[in-house]
Length: 236
Image (cartoon, one colour):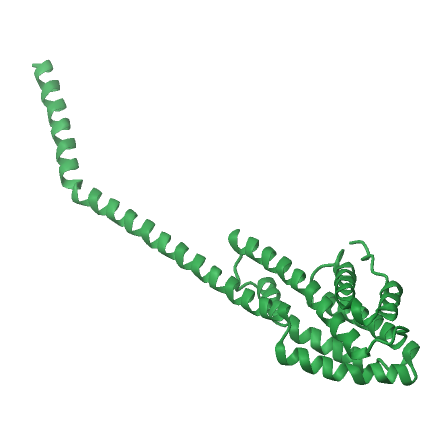
């Protein structure tokens, strides 16, 4: 697969120049950057965490360099909203893929399907764990210094706020996993009912044949007897 067209420097610059009035613009920009980081990859939990980490680091760096006087906490909050918007799309894509597989007869007891469902349910926890890792390193590297420390400190209330309310993508993922499991169970129940109906129909047909066997055999015997009698008369 091709490498996603994600430009961390462009995202960092966008955050660095964002004013307090450009919150929604920043949110959309981060969402697009996150989607770009996800595109061209398999939507595994590992790749989702990698994309969130890359976007989170670029956001932290931009917040530390912000030259518009915008509070780091506000910048980070809008960035998390943007990442959540992108994750929402990723979750929807995963659900559609799983729905299609289930509709085609995939068994949720198979390991690949179990893994896919398990990863779907873990997206929110993985996102928070990854952002916590980003926050821990926000004051190091290119963002080192007082500004970097301020950004690292700003991450704490932002993550606390979103953990309390939950991510929209996390709610959808959890509900989607339950829905897919329910869909599969219903499908299995329908298949079981059809098998029982087919088996019952076969038994009924066999019973009818068994009950009519005597009549059938009697008719065959009559035919054989008639044939023998006709043969005897011809010889006579």
